[in-house]
Length: 484
Image (tube, rainbow, N blue to C red; front, side, top):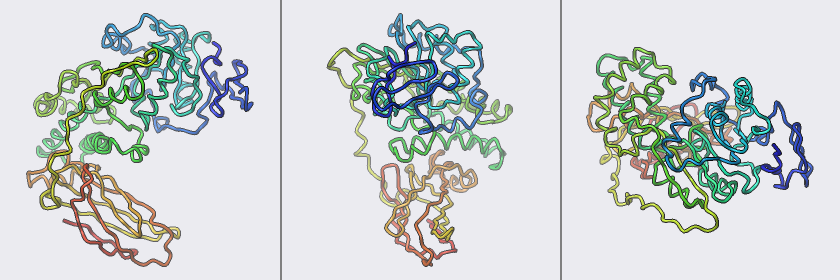
């Protein structure tokens, strides 16, 4: 396979002069990219993934036995599935869980396998080699994270990926570049998490955790802590779905709403954009079983939770429409030939006129947050630890100090607090369970500062400050308390 057909120099976007199995050399800036273990490294350490820090195959139960995902996607895609994928680019291949099926069952001219992690690509390449699927004429490997301009325009007929877009911070920019990379009439499809489904599932699990706490389980029980963490992780991404700066700090950045990602696809230049349910799991039995196993919840506790699931799922899961009853969507995009006039999806319902909670009393705000100011290595550090709960969903604790604003997300599980605040009986289970806040920030150099005036705000998802408190003084080395 001649990789000069697909790749260009990521430094100056010029064509590569020549190709060998050992190197690619730029025709303009003369930059040379070496092949190591059959992998061309265009990322070169400029991007990383936290998934490199775990045993990826063990965590996601990946082995040399190909999964049925390819056949599931073919079924879901129905008549959209092409007879041939032509020149194919796989993005975010990981260790090859989906690549095996592509290399074995898919009909195409050639396959270029990419991932941000060279470590994972090495495992993927070795796996294909063991299975007799590594044909150097048809399969090649390169590191790529969706940002480097290393892929030539119009060079691929098909782009595919499983669980990759939700790791990318700027989804719209990625899809725009995908349109550039595809040839006319090209297709792209991805398997990505369904936001509404996970919101319903996390709320269901929160109710089950609460029931277990009321039935004798301790807040310090390891299984309870693990399930609380799972609920909180999902809730955190839901609360901050539009905050790109915050999501940049997290490995999993997005979940998708069908009509929103379809509208994004149209804006980016695709002629069709569809979010299709893949494998329905209406009550969440299969999905939650996988998540509990990944979290390390013991088998007896997981069995108990799954037995309770049908009784608790009706409150949230049964409200999902048929297309939302799947944990993942098959996102299917097609590129037209020239300018295509498309009908945009119907706009989302207007939520801007929902009456806002008017202050702490109306929101029934309760909080206890310790604020400490310490001198560490010649710099002032502010530390916060505590909890806050209200009727509306809370997003941030904001502290304004010396002209700077510091934001601490409110999402950590606090089962110890839940048992107290939920006695009031007015808070949603998820809000009361995931009410913790903890973090640190550097205020600045301040060897001589002995105290600072701090203004605190507690912000809802809509950006409203429901605390509306007067500034207070924090002395260095001492703690102040924000309470309500």
